Amino acid sequence: MCTEAPDPAAVAFAAPRPVVAEAVDPVVLEPVDALTITVLVDNSFDALLAEAPGVSRGRLGTGPGLEAGQYVDGLARPGLIAEHGFSALVTVTRDGHDHTLLFDTGVSPEGMATNGRRLDVDPTDIGAVVLSHGHADHTGGFPGLERWLGRAASPLVLHPVAFTRRRLAPPGAEPFAMPQLDRAALVGDGIELIERRDPSFLLGGSVLVTGEVDRTTDFEQGMPFHEALVDDAWTPDPWIVDDQALVVDVRGLGLVVLTGCGHAGAVNIVRHALRLTGHDRLHALLGGLHLTGPGFERIMEPTVAALVDLAPEVVVPAHCTGWRAQMRLAQELGDSFVPGAVGSRYTFAA
Image (cartoon, rainbow, N blue to C red; front, side, top):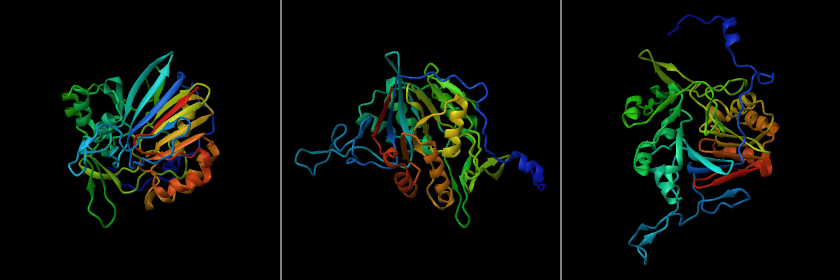
């Protein structure tokens, strides 16, 4: 661990800065005819949310009834489970064939699988699992997934830093130790680990996993009070370098970007996706944007302004975005703002 005073020139050299050049040798992301994103875990469930073209919602009564003796027919129809986490099924359609992966697994062992059953999802359709990063609100659902599938889901694509031991240590409070992924336990369950820092493709080259995201904005500066155990010492870890997103090119529409928490910064992620692919059109941004709480609300306005400039057709701020940021996005984006909830299914088609 370095204890010397940093050289100002070295700090200036390493600092994030805007990148205005076009992509050099952009990756070739195969366009798809259709994309469907089904949200299995999110922080809220609203059975009364309005549907819209390309958007369907989970309702009360979704799935089989549950035993409840206080009712005449002995059944409750509760709908879906909301919890502080995120998980989504991603299905792409190319040449008349559907291909599906799972992006994140939620926070509790059974929440994602329970919602999947109630939504009548066939888990055998899942061809791979991708983790946005190693935090527990995205990695908790593996036990339920294995019971739901009857076997371990494999392969699992993630950044190697996702296995890091981490905690939150705000001033004046006891540190909160985050559950740590166990590499050996996952491998022992029969999961094939694909650990990558660089961009990679899934589902026949039609889904791009960004890998590490370039940090180029001057306002998205990571997560305060977040620490990692490095060489037996707790060390500031604001950047959460394992944070990655999914990118799909829907033919005739443009890029659709799906985030878990967006720790790399929503604007950084979108700009990174555009640079990687050489595209100039963001059609949709969905997922957690991590703009909630005092540590992040200061970047809310520049984030909203940058997203307005990008002019996407659809923005679905989920999970850790926070209600204040959702309100501002709704005010500034107009009809492009779409509220999110567990059980929502978003379809993008050429």
